[in-house]
Image (cartoon, rainbow, N blue to C red; front, side):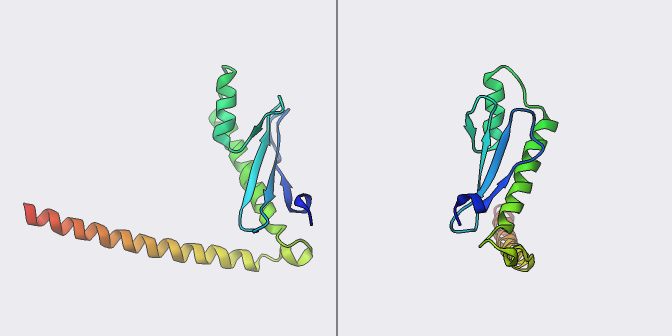
Length: 127
């Protein structure tokens, strides 16, 4: 499958804008490309913000959220295109990944908490 089979299109963008999320060959991350009305390419919503600023316009919060949401949706869609074919659409492998993520997050949270308590002890000594 070429890049086309790993592509999800951004929806609900303002008139003249289009974009896509292409799943990398590694199939872990999707790269976002947003096309402005003038044909310039942008990688993120903050890029889009500066495009507006250069034109003396402001990308309002609501509009920025619309771009963000669209990117998120496309990323999610691209992730479903993994390995192509109907079997790739099974959500099971996706939830596994998310669970691993939360595990990892909990671990790091615990670690930083321990770090904090050490610092607290030091402070008590100096008092």
